[in-house]
Image 1 (cartoon, rainbow, N blue to C red):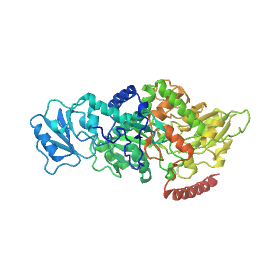
Image 2 (image 1 turned 45 degrees about the vertical axis):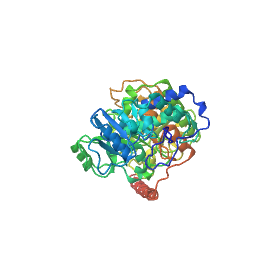
Image 3 (image 1 turned 180 degrees about the horizontal axis):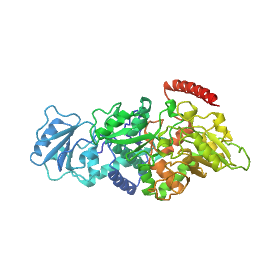
Length: 551
């Protein structure tokens, strides 16, 4: 009776490499009955098992009988025996050329949990995986030969088949290959299910450059079809959800989307992104997807702000946040780079302040920069506030590469700073200094993780929670006072999405941090990278000539 295929499986995310979650076990006796019984309850709560990523076609009026019988003659016989007993929904591999008028049909790879959700009973072959899903969902099950009878397969026997399916499999972590407990395998499948279900309402994705789509697709996949990347808003209706990379969408297209009444879902790079710059066309390995607003825009709420303000942070989550923070510090991981280099202090006992430069036309600066809009404004303000400090200025890597606005001449910079640094990852400079002054830069959050005092001159997402000295106009709605690990849990565990560069499967941040730190599967970008770097060199030369003329 028990199907051969393991019940728990890895979804076929776009572009992913085939990876097994389980394999045949020779040590099944090590899984206790109590563990399996708890696993059965957890699987039912999470609605995982089988092709849980499949499509979710419209269901008939409730209640209905779900029929899944491979043999056409047996199926016709079952349908005939159920005539006049209510609505029938037949699930087949392909819709028959002449379907029965007594039943409606769905076909292909469907989410079995969705199809059984409204069923009053299920008619299914004895060796079909749906048998186990129906048992887990608590639905009465009948075999084709007894479709018209009042009694079906016993629940006890079916649940025993589920137990056997789970107990005979050894579970392996698909990212590391290491042994994994049954409860951890269930938790991972539940994580994938939640991600896929959250993507099902997305009707289109607009503003995604082709070189970003390869890594964005698995993180935006809704299970049953390819991610609908589009270049225009045609064929969208009012109320449709559209994943939008707004900084790459023209004002006219945004205006058209607004007229059409679609709901924009903001998508941006995550906080642990890649080794290499987006401006060099290195694809992101993490994204943030926000249905309320942009996380960096203090003028309106965002899902991240809501998580920080209202979220629940149990002790297990905070322990995980602390371990992740320690791992990031240990491996020297920042948004664009990896590496940890000890740097000697420059000026003895003087207070050392790091001032990270930013892209001046970046949306985070335009939305949250307040009175500070340029890098020179920030530097001059820090010097006025701290006349005796040793100020270190680190230009933003996108600006240094010549791709974005915000470059300063050395002469202009040294009017306020004591040193300009361009080499080594920013994490190493954060470790050396005494404090950090930022406009809205993510470097301030990275400084908090490393225990450094941070002053915000604008209003970044991490301002206003009691962890920073805030000089910007923090919104009154940020009333919660959070610990560092609560902020880390919200920002790195609960909010972003991460992609494993090796398996191309959505993963946890811990997996991505280790991959980046070990240099495994790093994103190198495509053929556009040399061209982009050449463009940056030309722009830097032109900018230096303009600055030389000014001075």
